[in-house]
Image 1: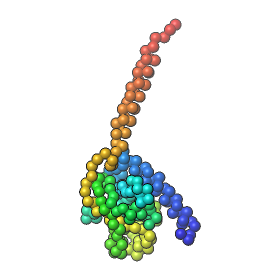
Image 2: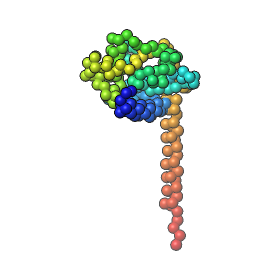
Image 3: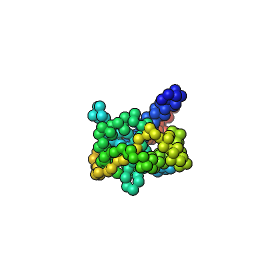
Image 4: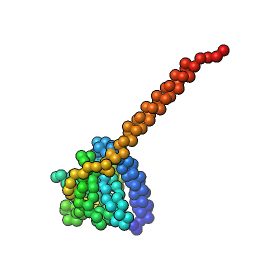
Amino acid sequence: MDNPSLAKSDQLLRAGFRYLNRFMLLLWRLGLGSWLNLWPAVLGRYMVLVHRGRKSGLLRRTPVNYCIVDGEVYCVSGFGSVADWYRNLLAQPRVELWLPDGWWVGEATEITEPSERLARMRDALLGSGFAAYAAGIDPRRMSDRELDELTRDYRVLHITRTQARTGPDGPGDLAWVWPAVTQLLLAGAALRGRRKRRITHRPVRA
């Protein structure tokens, strides 16, 4: 970027989304993924992409905004070709998706045809809720020309779902935390209650 202030703004935005993504991923793992999608017009629609690092070979989990058009899943790399998850998908298109309605295996392909790219770009940004506006984009009011100009560095991906998945490593793998914490809290409350009763009924010596 030639403008230092814009470069700084972009760095801050990326850092903010990095922390937000960690929080989003934790909620998905706690079994609250559906709750994240209750108010899509404001908060956006969220899924998690499980992809393999192109250098490390390790599995990565990345929350992203998405949209579904005619049963097909689309998402946008708002930081363009520098986003690690986007580069990983180019190197290894096979991904897993955590969606509110299930866990899927899919195949990712980039959309480059101009008219289709712009249409799916607008759909995906509409599905991003506040995130698009945080980046200075109003997908509801901008003309095609304005939107195309502002998102020229963005990348649009189409993910075709190929099969449903099940198993222990998908969304909600940390859902066991809720009953465990609840039991600990109840046990702690019961212990405090017993201690309080002992103190209350302890005989007073003259």
